[in-house]
Image (cartoon, rainbow, N blue to C red):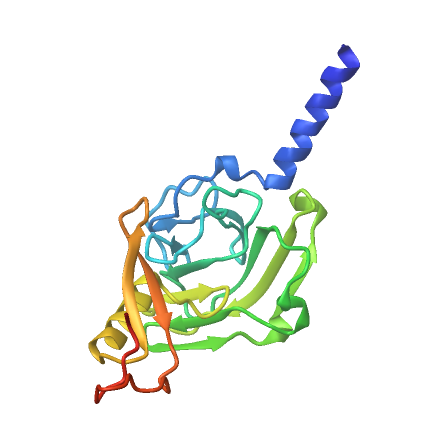
Length: 230
């Protein structure tokens, strides 16, 4: 009996390690200021402010390592804590020429395109076009210091103090952007495209059904137009 209890305990610890400790993550960080431990003075430039409370944002926790290094924890997929890949967050209150290393410490994938030369994307308020970071500044590896989770580290140098910088796993494509695109297609009254409401999600968001047909369907006999829909 005692041996069985030990095995169950070991299995529980292993499961917790595989999950990356996501039980400690709540929602996304919201204007979270990171300052050195024990610091109680006024906010200074270089005390980074992290935020992910926006559509497609994902950042659950930030740990201060030094003035130049931060460990970042991403939240898992909804209803599936074993999958942790996407991140998207902003950073502000930076100091000009401030150099940092961000470590995304709880990736779940064993293989990643980051190992093949892909790199995260970044933009700022004065430069709103997404750009990829130099691949030479990006590292993807398994780290014994973080429960042997996969870690992606990248170095970055801030250059404009008044800018808000945004970093993402890849080019974000939000639900709102998709809905705007589908609405624009619907307004064009394309003869080969039909959009229907299939249902609503738990959060009352549209679940669209798109039917795309062949625009070269033969004309129905006795009619002057092409009939694509029953």
